[in-house]
Length: 186
Length: 188
Image (cartoon, rainbow over all chains, first blue to last red; front, side, top):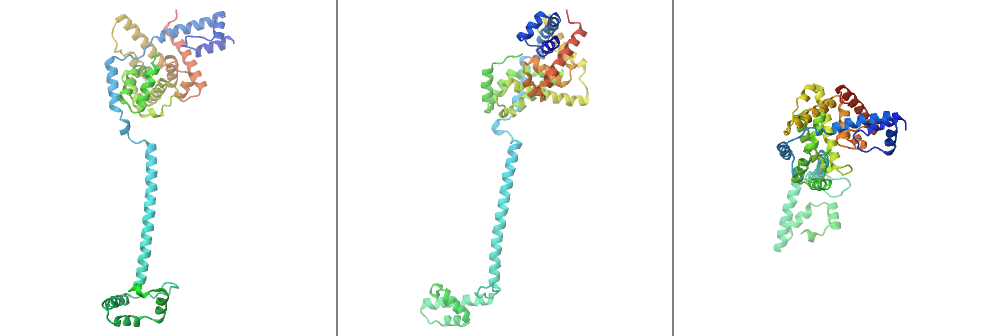
């Protein structure tokens, strides 16, 4: 190691109490580097005595109290931005799920309403053979069925039933025969 | 450099990390002096130094969970203090430079032997005057290396520079110190 390299190392070691063996050996043999090292050692010794700003006990306690007043208990600390981001993502996901479910429910209800509306307006849906009554016809049939039930319960003749059956078309009758148990209906 | 009872400090840090504010106050009590010394040497202003030191502890409390013990707790604290002070200096430089006259007017809270106190204040004034000759980042490097005995690697992490840059900065500061001493005719 030449003198320049040694002096660079001595600058880096400024403030250290111990020198590496190779540096120390060079310094002991080289008067220029020894003078350089002595100069730095003197400066270091002088600066090492500086304690900076010294605080009194009262100042320290005041500072401790100030810090204590400014720090929040951990369990009451505000949520960190990372937590807030996470929470907002969860909230957004819940919002989307709620909206989707709401839309689905409303859709189902709408479909049901459409069906009810179709029934009440006497529409025939697609290939379905079921005859859909108008409001007036439905009302009339309801009354006839009520009379039929009363007749059946009281053991009277089936006048009302005959009247009801008289209103039914051949196709409706065939459908009823195939698909319905009139006894159960009654 | 202020020596800490590392075992005691670790015990307090562990309790503070769990939310124990009393333990954290004990840490503040133990480290307020060295942290304030650091902020004072870098700013040259007593009130600013105290404010920055307190800010350092508040930030430390808020980020205790982030302390993983890779470096010593003291190094971690010096890092926070250094960053806070450098940011403060940058902001202050936008308004006005630190005045040399302000530094020489700083007084100490310690009173005792008048001669010793005079010598101590004179030295503090010289050191503060020297520190103002360094750019803020170099000031931080000198403080952390010379007074805090941190390794160059630790300092590089603290000031967010390459290790080589930190070493060059320290050597530059030492060169400037030699020039400063010659101007003051300190050498025997």
